[in-house]
Image (cartoon, rainbow, N blue to C red):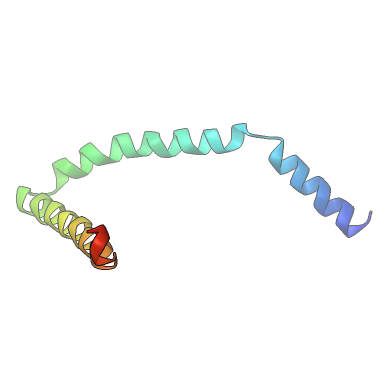
Length: 75
């Protein structure tokens, strides 16, 4: 079998099975629903606060960087 034919058939087979990504997505979501609450129980309130503070600072710094790159008229 020609290499190009084999590659074409491989791509066609991969595209014809849409159920596979759905299974992965469901499995990933299931793990997140289990892991989040158990992680929250296992860390202290101070650690949760520090994690939330870091996330907030990251979000706001990205927003500030984005606005700084805009032209003056658009601000």
